[in-house]
Image (cartoon, rainbow, N blue to C red; front, side):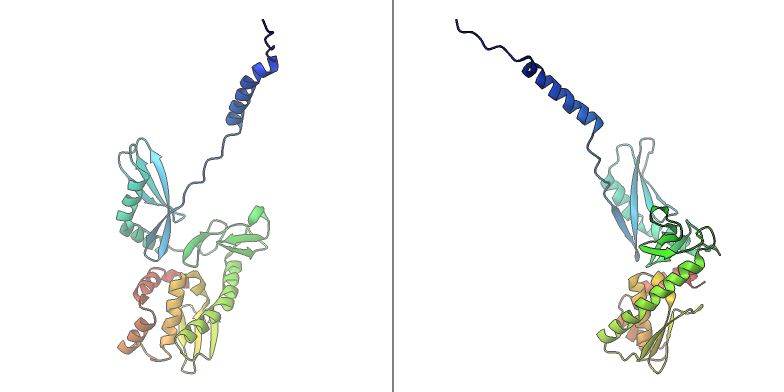
Length: 265
C-alpha cells in the first residue's frame, strides 16, 4: 500500500487564516462610500443645489429653502429620490418667491465671516482662508487679503471686487461692441449709487463695479443696454426695440435686477 502524503498543517490552516484576514480587512478597511451626487434645480436665472434627507416619520414630501441658498427636500418613508426631485420641480415657483424675499432682506452694514455676499449672481458666504490662514478670506472662488479678519470685512471685499471689475468689464464691453459693430471709445468703471451704467454721446460707457456681483447674463444685458444708447440716446420704443434685438432675454435680466436692487446700497 503506497504511503499517503502527509498533509501540511500550515496548508490546512491557511484557508482559514486567509478568510479571517479578509474578514478583518473588510471590517477595518471598508471601501469609502461613494460621494453623494450633486442635484441642481433651475429657478429663474439661478441654479439651486438640492439636498435630500430621508425621514421615516415624515408623512409627505417637504421643501424648504435654507439660509445658505440650498433647498432641502424631506423624503418620507417609502418615498423615492426621483419623486422628491419631481416634487421640487413642481414647486419651483415657490422657491423663486422665497429667493426674492431672501434677496430683499436688509444686508448688514458691516460684513464679517459668515456674511452672505453676492458674487457672479450667487450668494456666497465669507469664509476663512484655506487652512485657516490669518489675513485672508474666501468669497466663492476668490481669495481676498484682509489684515483684520475679526473686523469689518466690507471695505476689503468691495475693494477686491472693484479691482476685479476694472480688469473684466472693459474687456467684455469691447467684445460685445465688436460683435454688434458698435463704436465704443472708452470704458470707465465707477462707484455709482443709483444706476448700473451710463453712456455718453462721445461713446464712453460707464459701468458700476457691482456688475461683477450679478449673473453673467445680467451683466451682459447691462452692457448691451448701454451699447443700445449709442443708437438711441433715450428710452423710447425704438430704444427698447434695439435692446431686444441685442439681448432678446432682457426682460428676465430686468426682473433679476428688480429683485436685487439692494446691491446698489
